Length: 559
Image (cartoon, rainbow, N blue to C red; front, side, top):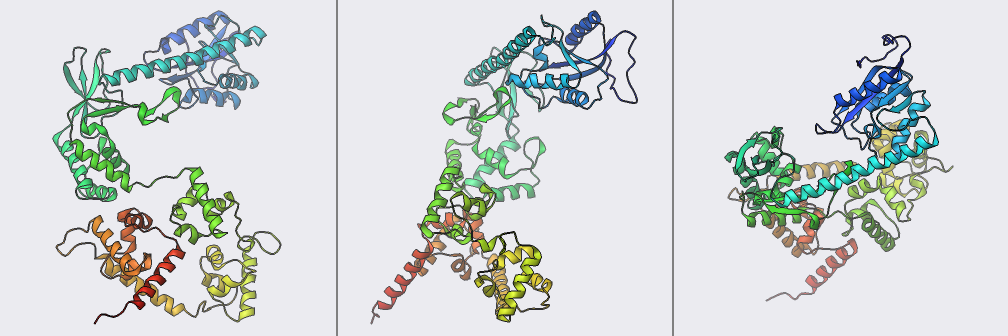
């Protein structure tokens, strides 16, 4: 009988005299597999007895697909033991080629067998009609069998996919947990509704099917409330999440509500009674998203919310969702900005109306410097290298500060930035955590870095006080919450008054919330500006402001 002893240096299996120690590898994908684990073990045991092998090790992957190595812990352990020299056997017995794996790349299957053979452990296929002896015949037959095993999986995947789509068209749910506010219900082949399935339960009769039906009233009421909060009350997803968390509400299977779960709920057509299948397919172990025109839609249950409310939520989701530019489009827009200005900087990217924020550009490329290089712009050398063309060391930077201080008798941010032979002040700040720290390391002690130091601190204090004061201006006089439309009216008023919009203009107005509040509520200041019809660059802002001043000064006074 096969044993499952682990072979180690301290506990080697006892091998009867004259028998060759061997390991067996057995695998099945599902409980409906043609060859169960017991059947495989029996077939391998018969082969071992006829060939003089004693099975001293068993590697078992139960309920694991043979398409990839991912998830097959036993096969990974087998390869690790063999390649690590820990294997107390000289041969691995496998029932047939398909049990070793149905790898879509047949070279992968051959590669794992080659690794075993190189470590001195051969692989024998017990139920195959050929000897795995390294001959040309066995090599040809093995390759054909591997191709057949891979093709079997491909064909089976296509058949299963077609069957799932057909059943979805008939109104039956195809796997997965029930969305919040719904439950899975069994229906027999005659159309009679039966029991409600609890989470984790599966149907026991092959002719039964699964549909979705309304869940508990408490859950369906919360679904309606979430839609009303989003559509009627104009609450942001983060505000809904916070409200549900404060009430101790939990989502499916007791998890916390998050931005993703709320968005998924608002997008799920099941709440208007429509089941959608095929958004994502997982053929051959490779999940991929599909085009909307290929999805299968069918009416499955009574709606929980009105269709009109669902469409209103879809429109608002589209309005607040930022459009993700493709890599090609982002590259073209960066190139356009470079050609317009002949250079690229953080400020230019930040103020550009047709580019995302610098943080988004940095995330896409890894850094702004990499983004600039992609369009052919290389930042000035003084920002990167010293006079010898090598990266600045800390001592190099401190010497630069000593030189600038000796030439000017003082140090300020402006003086450092104007010096063409040293990095910018921001470079020193990033390296040393602040210019004050850099000056102290350079041996200057307490240095007044700017003549405007006191004024700068005073401005910071004033900005803080203004932010605290404006934080309270988020409600109307009657105590109701400021709506998005009221915020847009404030922007229109400021644009009529100043001729343009900016963070400074918004923050300087004591009667409205801060620019940060506008940014959070309206999806960014650029998006907010666009909603009131304001698209401009810095040059147009100055031109518009001068034009406004000229027109106002030339207007005759009224008697």
